[in-house]
Length: 425
Picture: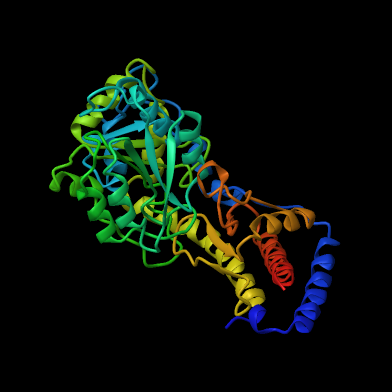
């Protein structure tokens, strides 16, 4: 049994008095801390400062002698596609290189599907109501795209090994279910990695819609926090083996690898889907920024170069994750006030607080000078029925600020839980 359940009302009142005093002392420090978004810290961006001098004066020819200063090259330079193909777990000829935002590629794919359909579509998606499955907790920007484009969202709980596949397999029998968001490695925000079984079931399941798509956002493919990187099977291979070669749209980017505002985004899929994508993109652009593609190739060089660069990233952010986990453990272990993820990669820590207290925690944190992602952001429409899930983003602040923020957040969680216990009687 947990401490807050076993304590007598008198002891709970005493604990409340002590915790409130600690909280007021923290608030009196007048701190201004931000744990809202998973942005790279300035020190992480500094790791790529050498890119600012690349490709260098006169270095504008691709390996094939193409002038990267000019128009064209809609699919991306072959050497850039070859460099990042292993990250996407796809042949380089099935990779498209875009500009800096993978979110933009996802938005485009959905918009084009609504307007034109995808390979296998009997009609454009917009000609009937469209539903997407949304693993929860999930990424608020995924949900925002659906909400903006009028797509109905159905939450599916995460299990620790990915989404609840029994629920998914039942829901995809509905022909209106056209898509599903997936962050398969170090998921945003839970940090969990989909199991091999989960991924195989996603590839092989029977769907009511012949043009169902997995929106496979492998945003954290190389973003490890330990020396033992997680591995997942290649979704494109599994879909092809299961007789659904066009099922997966794979996305990734270098936003949290090199320079967040000046990176590269990637789309990978079956040959048929790549043709579909390029046919649509032809009307949108004359071609991507190929100089930036050369810049990334010159800087990262090869798979070993990507791995070495990400080790430097890990050295900067892993201590920040450890600081948050240490504060939660020190202040909250055994109290029953919360439970939290211990991610081995990615950019977030998920904390489930006592039911009905997440919004109160966010409000208390704001009063104490700590900005948190709004409660409910990890669910479609911002509606989390249990009011318990918080997403913490420790990467951007300095390590000292992360330590301070984590201490304050833990105090807010405990104080909100004690208030909830007292209200329950």
